[in-house]
Length: 372
Image (cartoon, rainbow, N blue to C red; front, top):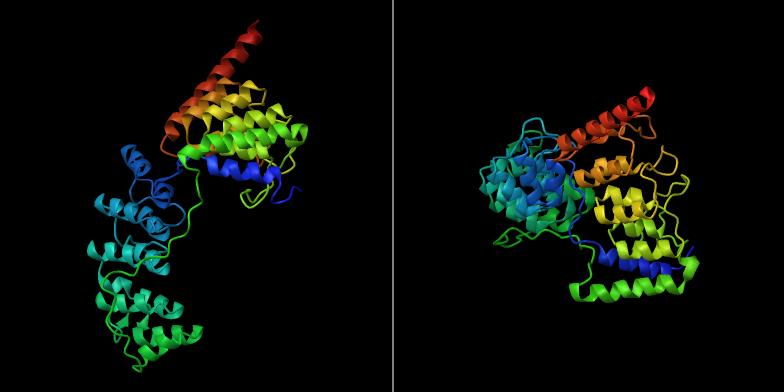
């Protein structure tokens, strides 16, 4: 196993830094696009007939955007008519927002007309986590402590019990009328934002790429056997060439293959590079791999099937590329399901048509050979 400060780890890190800012892979649903906060692809789904209330991942697009803290996506969905409190939802948008103490999104929902009673659950959540600022802000918006709410009961008692359970002394004192916390926040308390993974600056990218290629060349055939390793490595076992292919860094893919990295290998739990390139819709990298001899059907035609990965990417261009290279349109997944069952995304109809046309073409060619 290469060490964290090894050349393999450094190239793994550079691959991560050089990945595209925006993924080529398309979201599988409007909800998935909302989770990403991708307004352009959200509009694409609507343009192609998606229902703004469609449920994916057990949530509406609006609730999913709230869960992921996508403020602009929340505004966009509300502006396009999304229901503020969709009936029958396992989790409502306001619950999703306040479950993460995201008052900015909660404010958008309330300002759009959601009754403030729907935010009462947030007081209990704030009490249990010691977020006095959130609790006071909700009270300033009109939630009443000394009131009985559906499914909550007496709000003060419920919040006090939650604070006592987690030992939130300041909140306990406030709810017991033993503490004056002062005025509420003048604006919604800001949400805690998860740090994003860094990307290389535009001016640094050529130097980083040159460094990675030099490291590969300096290590010769040893580099061809490198695994992605170090803090930037994926959580599953993956060859470095597969990692580079999945991130769309074709120059490093070429360098690793020149060093002897295999393009197809037996199923050992490690995805091959063509599968990863297809899964992330990196058409140029997939084309490089096919030109260099990667099998369009995978090593054993049963596992890590590139065409299945391409179908799930939602990008017709990479599906077409693999079909043109001879990939079997009627292949089956390792669990026996037709790979066509995995079609999803805004271009699902186009992808199904490509598969049907390829199947018809192969059937016609097979019939022609029999006649001869």
